[in-house]
Image (cartoon, rainbow, N blue to C red; front, side, top):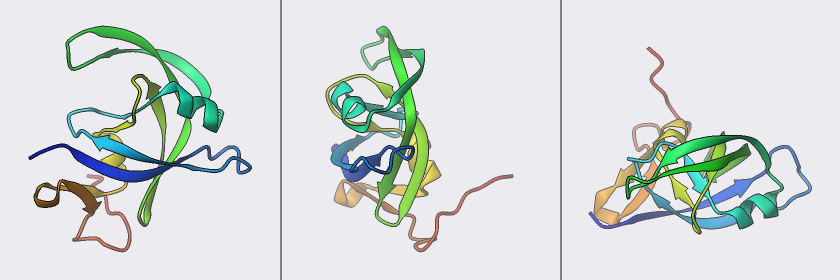
Length: 126
């Protein structure tokens, strides 16, 4: 399977006057959360909540800002979360994918809503 990308929309749910930003995000189910570059933080006027230590794929440790809240939209799905500020592009990890009930489609190198629950997200809570 090659790289998987998704067209998503990012917004600041605390400021309705700001327009959302459409981005192409790299999907990585081995990553936990969403990572965004600094210019998106500035555009959406996201507030730093705290700093977090992260380990990148090269096994290096970094302390980065954790900002939010941020709203993520994909097709008929949405979620609210915090974001790590690192890198120069958007990376979407497993937590927002699970929250929106999205699945990776290896054949199309894309993501889609869960075909078992196409109209509303489902979740396992037991």
